[in-house]
Length: 454
Image 1 (cartoon, helix red, strand yellow):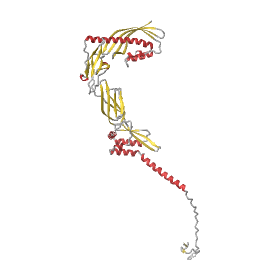
Image 2 (cartoon, helix red, strand yellow; image 1 turned 90 degrees about the vertical axis):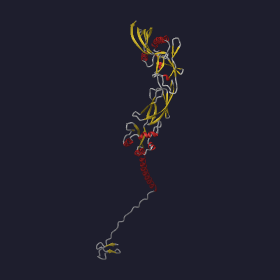
Image 3 (cartoon, one colour; image 1 turned 135 degrees about the horizontal axis):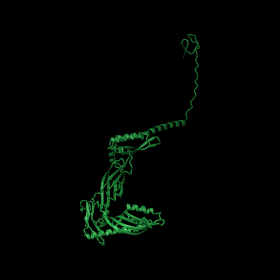
């Protein structure tokens, strides 16, 4: 139904004129709207869009899941809860341990609880929130390394953090060699008791050490606990000593050879700094034997380690003065002959440039050895020759027990590479020590020299 635009009356049946006022009815033409029909979407395109949507949703979900999994704060919170709840396994599952290092899990967790966990937790948080690209350490209140935090990433998107427990290097020193130490499943041998021996690595805790050793006097064994604690150097050092008494040596003839349980040790008393340690559960018999000029032997009284007095064991020879004097005189003669024999070998060594000819005469590590090694070494490319004409013993004395000073006069002719000759007349003092049944030169002092050209 329409209405008159002039008077507003309703126009029934759409007349051309208004029946009320006679005004012409206006006819409004509706614009026809042309609708373009839509092309239906293909099934393939619908499937592709659906897959793309699923993938986008999946990627977003995966990213959120991985971000949650690799969120370091989540692990730190779990560790914190484990400490609060006293859960050993709950805490240690987030820690990486070196499989070759000794570990007592229960004691290690107890050790962690003695530290300032709140401070270490804050260090962990700080490390994970920092931009550091290298490994960092979490320290205890004393500055000792407790954890090493290794940073890594997955696909360059997700930061990961591996918390590694820091072990200590264990060293053991002892008073006897050779010895064998066993700690856990590790076994080490000690060949030099003067130096610490590296046993292996261990985490803080208490470990049982078993050890065996043997010396001239018997066999020994010990079992003891060591407590490994962290240090700034990372070294945990322990001293484990075998029980047994040690004695000084009291004798009037240090060159006498020691016998133990009836068998010769092939060592003179002066070669031994002390006697012992002795096993606590075994009695050891000992005596010393001294060779005389007539081929006979003197024997000291047989004793045991229980007969020590004032920290010493005595090996005193009770023969008459004549026999003792003869033995002493024989020793001095042997010392003199030793020096003369050295001079003969020294002449050959100089002319052949062969140090090995005199090496057996020299005390290892002595000044005499050092000087003669260098001197003969310097002759290798020189055309020199030496002609020893006379070697005479001027004086002999025992400076102290087992140490002798032999004074000599030596004459020789030296010829250089030009054929020029010089005579030498020298006075020397040889300091030699008694070793077993022989001697070694410790030092050679040139006291006076007179030279003349021929």
